[in-house]
Amino acid sequence: MLGGMQTEGDAVEGSEGVDGERMLVFGNPAPDEFYVDQPERRGSLRRILVVSNHVPPELLEALDLLQRGDEQIEVEYLGAVSGRETVQKIAEPSDFDGFDAVVTIGKTVQYALVRGVPVFCYDRFGGPGWLSAENFAEARAANFSGRGFGSLTSAEIVEALTRGFAGAAECALALHARYAREFLLSEALDRLGRSGQGIHSARAISDDQLAAYLVNQKVMNGLVNTVEARTQTNAFLEGQVRVETARVQSLTEQNEVAASQLDASASQNAELEQQLAETTAELASRAAENEQLAARLPRARLGRLARRLWPWRRHRPTLESIMSNFNDQIIAEFRANNGTVTTAGFGSSLVLLHSLGVKSGIERVTPVMSIARPDGTWLIAASKAGAPENPAWYANLKAKPETSIETGSDTVPVVAEELTDPEYDAGWAEFTSRAPGFADYQVKAGSRRIPVIKLSPR
Image 1: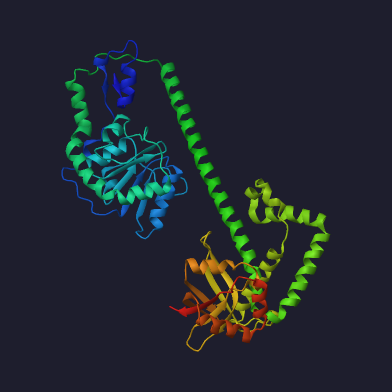
Image 2: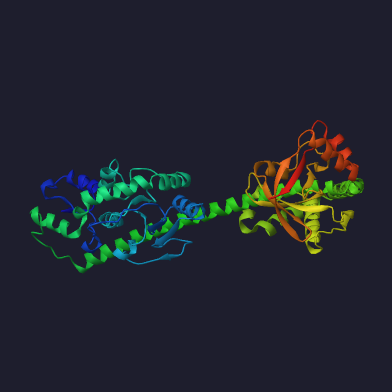
């Protein structure tokens, strides 16, 4: 009796009526043409071959991170992988050439071992990761299926792949020297013949038995494909939820940006606040109409998935959302007229400040009033119309001061630096002399001292 892996052999050998002396674990040996006598030594991880028909989501995410990272590691797929450019074929020896490592399970592990290629054993069942002297025996007992080791997060997989490669490359050579010939098909057949456990008798099966076996195989394959399809669907839906959550976060940050538009023209603040108060009062008086509008807007913006996330459907227009539209209007007019904005009398006093969201990682564009200085720098103030807290772009610049601004028709890379005493007093005086309304903002801000930021070309 032949077994596929040691754990199966142990289970069958312990069954009633089974002669353990006639049990042999045959495994999944590699065809002899995969063998190389002197494998090359891999120095660095640059190219990864993934051989699988069921790559789990955490592994896909980790491989995507490696491709987009500073190292820009190249990843190619052999097998059926949803959403990736792949090649579907039976693995051949030449498929492993030029790759520094293979991510796979099962018989392909033996194919890579006999060629001396480092193996990261991981798939939908999890796995031990890089094969090593410590985990080899346990991984082999499960026929390198990954069972028995548990799963990792995408971050843990990235860490293991990058930091463990040097050791894995050395171990691959040691495993090749110790086990390569043992995993060859010819050696497995020789062991079968030498064991005296060759085929002593054969029994024909009927057409009905063969048909029943084939139907059973189709059913099992169908179940496996169904589980895989559901796994991929769940991964897709989880990705969509993350995208929509990021979009909602973006809308929230844009609402915060709306208040910063009041910085640009102190003389227009009283009129704008009055108009906004009237608009808010009108919206409050039309509650029934707003309920209908609030139920329609999320479906138009977020699509079918958003209709299932019912808490979003009760969103009402707010002061911040109204100002967000005003913000978009100013940006469009700025870019259409090379930096000149006639709306609200801004003229050419604005710059478009780019910043990277601290939480979302999404680039934001905010029109802010600026003072161009003779030394080629600009000053901007984080007034937020005298609100008790700083605008969102201030936190973004503190986290990542290297950014850019649009001025006129040019985009200028700059670095942001918050002014401190005594430079702060001089910078703040420039703002209050240009627009006296900034002094009112400081009064409204209370204990918060409005920051003044210097933008210097990089």
